[in-house]
Amino acid sequence: MQTETITVTIWSEKYSLRANWADAASPIEQRAYECRCDVECDHECWVPTMYQVADFDHSPRRAMRETLRVAVQMGGDDPGDPEIVVEIDEALSAIEGGC
Image (cartoon, rainbow, N blue to C red; front, side, top):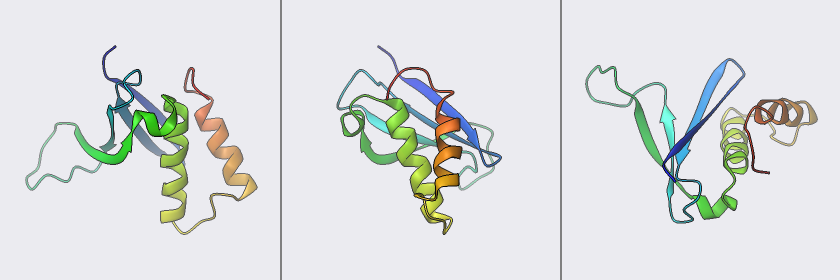
């Protein structure tokens, strides 16, 4: 299996992850939509996360849920807020497969 990318749009922002979801040791990368290159560029910038596919039992949906949970926390909100949980669940429903 090859590297696959999953993307969700929530709160008017895109979040993308890519990995070889069949390979437990595959690192998970996140797309940086605001490129961190030192020069202006038009390529896709992917940055490593601290996670591997095995951390989420090969589930892209679980990996994305954690990504969104961290984004909520970094924004100063409570990821356990019932409204936020519903918004995340709705965004994740667009991802096929996984738990």
